[in-house]
Length: 154
Image (cartoon, rainbow, N blue to C red; front, top):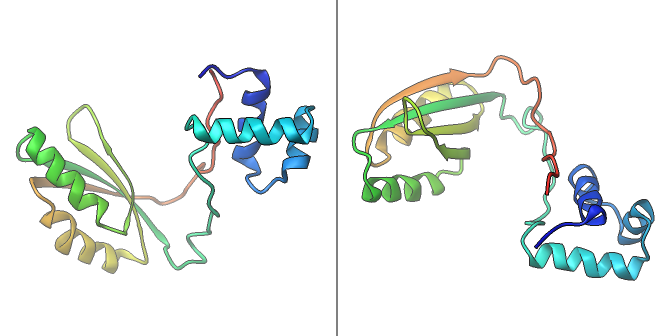
C-alpha cells in the first residue's frame, strides 16, 4: 500500500478541496482523467480516503462553546474501557474522544450552545458514563487553528 508521488499529491489536494471534479484533479496532478478515476477508487479501497463531508461553521450552527474535558476513570480495565467507549459513542455532543497516556485517561472534545448547556451535559451525560470518577474542563476562549490537513509523509 505504498503511495507514489501522484497519490500523495491527490491526497494533499483532496484535503483542501474535497469537491474538486475528477477532471480538474487529474489536470492538477498531470494524469489522464481515466487514470485519476482508477487511482481515486484504489485510494478509497485501500482506506486512505475514508469519506467526504461538509465543514460547518459551529458559530452559525449555534454551537458557540468549545470545551475539552479530561476524564479520569476509577479503574483502568478492558471492561471499563469498552463500556466507557460505548457510552461516549452514543453522545452526539462529543466531537472527538481520545484515550491518552498521562495523568488522566481520556480527552473529550465537545461543542455546545453555552455554559448552561455544558453544565447539563457534564452532570447528566459525562458523569453518568461508566467508570468516570473525575473530570477537568477547559473552555476554549479562542480557536487559533482547527482546519489543518494531514501531512502526507508516506
